[in-house]
View (cartoon, rainbow, N blue to C red):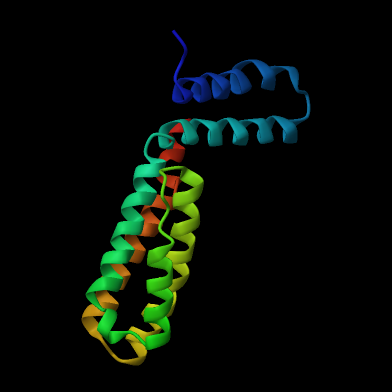
Length: 147
C-alpha cells in the first residue's frame, strides 16, 4: 500500500529533523533544515484542504460581488463579468489559485469603491471575507505543532 502524500511529507520532515540534521555541523544549515522540515509538516496538514479552501474562498468572493453588483462601477462590473466567464473548468489547485488571485485583486477595487460610496454594509461584509481569506492563508497557528 502506498503512503498518502500527507504521510510522505510527514516522514520526509521527520527524516530531515532526526537524521539529516545530525549529519550537518553548521548551526545555520541545521536551522534551515529545521525550517524546511517545519514547512513540510505544515504542508502535510494543509494539502487535503487546499483545493477546498480555494474553492470556498472563490465562491465567497463571487457571492459578495453578486450581492453588491449594482453598487459597483460599470468598469468593475465588466471586469467581474469577464472573470466570471473565465471560471476554472477543473479542480486543479493551480487553476483555483489563479482564479483566486484575480478575485482578490477585484475585491480590493470593490472595497475601495464601497468606501468611496460609504456603503457600510458592503464594507463590513468585505472585511469579513478578507478576514476569512487571511485566516485560510496563515500558518502560525500550526507552528507550535512543529516544536
